[in-house]
Image (cartoon, rainbow, N blue to C red; front, side, top):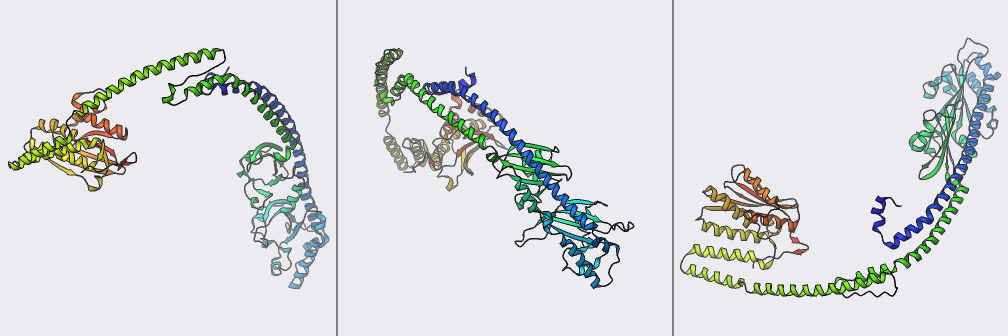
Length: 614
């Protein structure tokens, strides 16, 4: 059984055909995948153990070669140290003139040259001799490998040598740059010298041997586990002394996170783990050299080590894919045979709405689907009859409504009548009647607005001005008003008839209650992409009235007293969205301010709003 959450989220949301495919493929693939995976994991574990053992043996050989190389250097420096030539110079007095100094340096240089590079086989090294109390040596730099201790005693590698250390591996040493300007690096060893014939002299000098890291790299490369393996030698601080790329030398090795825990922080003799290095799956192994406090690290790509395992895995993947294709073909045949009637039914009811009632499904098999399709065809016929009856009823209703609208007053007749009254008032020299009739005519014209719901703010302001003119005459000029409408804001659009209900509300509930002179201020301001229209009065409204009005605006209960402002708020939200609308605030001195929040737009749904001032 499928888990209930998986069944609800996945299986219940796919077609029957695909569901049958999933069931059948799961039945075939899950057991075979478990068997193949178990076999692969067992084989992988065996091969990985063999690879680890092989790498361990390779790293043991690397360790022996490193120690053997350093031991050979120690033997050669010991032979130089115990030679008669060097001991004779150490036990004799210092020459008194330049000729004697040059002869002494030449003898020592010849001694060093006598131990040719062939003594180290394939590993090359450079010998240098530094003697105490020979400051004159620096006067003759053409003798390259012999100098005084004073010339190096301030260098870090010299100061890091412990006192009375017979033979010491000092680690990585940076020499002079090569011809390309790149730094060259060496592994430096040093042996302190004492006069064997005179034990009263505590310290006579030292011999250094510098081995180029490229020679160590050759030793490591000859023993690396695979052709593309990379071998590193790290010092006690985790810095690279020998590596496959010069740019990594003398740099911290712990930048590669997968190697960090295995190599630098570990102290075990041998460690290994799998990980991804530079987007390549690799086996990372490390070998600790306790005599030197160094660590050898190998990074071997799995594609080199797991050749047979990868081939075996590819064969298993191929078998699984072939099984999947065969199972899919068989499952597809079975599911098609079962789901063909269902898909036929889906195609039939997927037609357009206008063609749905003309659908009739023909089915020749004598099974459960036959009964289902017969009942469906009968249901479609009944629904078609009911829809036809409803359509006729709606047509008759619309016809009655149209006839009622045609019976209403023609707007042109109304405008002509008001125009006649205006001329009669002018003729009788009654300008107030003329002004009132003209304002009423403008108000009706802008209100009807040819049936448009969205108009320019300019038209809304003109309509409001006509309405206020009528109210001024009606209230015997006890009402004054101020309009602050920048010209550039008048071209934005708004829902029509949003200011008149607010002004009427202010006159009725604000000014009539205060029984004084009323003043209205209408202002337009732009704030980014938002437009604010404010209607402020100096009436009797207070903060308590603001709370009541805001409750009415947010209430879902229809109330006659608040129909006007509720209608304004509702229409704004319907046209522009829930973030816009109407709210009230109490003024600092007296009265209330209604604030309409609109988007600063000059069109609606890509249609520019026409100027209706004609």
